[in-house]
Length: 439
Image (cartoon, rainbow, N blue to C red; front, side, top):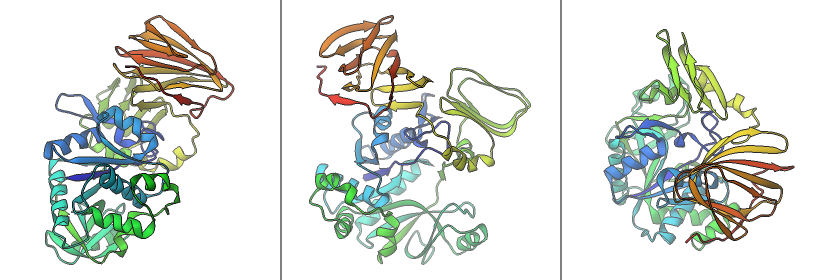
């Protein structure tokens, strides 16, 4: 199975756990078989491997999410990175070109596209394989998955099939309706449009050529910003006459708000949390070291992270986005390919960060033009490189990097560093990368 997972999201609906880098799919609230907390993307990737160990998985994403994906899934997962945001059709076209020109997937093979963040079980991935098999038959150029509705939702578009067979031709599509109209659609056999579809690879690349002239993946990537911003629905779905829908009867939840996310939580409290016996239907996720105590709360969601603290009625939590839009914040926590960082303090001319490097990993070799840095080694062992000179480091060491100093660090064990940045203009853009070989 060739599978493209669409990983996007601005991270605003699940503030304060999510931010511009850490979208909802990277929040660890589920438990694996060993009782360890995992994220949506980790859970989905694990279920894919259970159903099809040979699946070719490619994650289509933005540059800001690459480090988090590598951190949670490792370095071997396939990633198609958008150089800029151009909506869903360009993102899918770029991933399709990556599969054909870089991974050598033949044009006649089918590809399944789905979001990375629904809450599903193994039967969903069995259905994805069947969706790909249906595309292989060539009866339609595009095969959609239609989710059997569980209630008249106003959040989803609807697919109207010609009949109630397992696989049917599509009669029409309907935009997000009000509840009464949605109920009428459902009574006629309508299905939720969950953004899941399959096609032959050659078909999609033909559609891409109709809208954009390119020679191969590298050419498309280089000229990506020239592509029109257009959704897959507008570019392909609404213009395709040969289109089918396959019904899916299993569990499928879009965990896009705090209210729906907490419904999928296996326990009411994650992190350092205490609740008294008078709390009812209270969910707390604490990403801080300090404790949270809840007493006598009902139907409440509490979430705390370095980005802020949310205390909300469960139903009202769905309306958080306009308020978060008004916040002008630094990204206070992020996962990187080498580990993670957490902002501890921000002043006018300084920033203090807790950096955690995973064993065997290292930062890029780089320098800053607008700030100096001081590293206080809190725990662990590693190697620091300053202007080409290597030095062993361990707990208690203090390293000073003046402006312009080329530097990097590699962890032998888990390495914790308190990094103090000092300068007039402290910015993530202030970084010049250089080559360095740790071997």
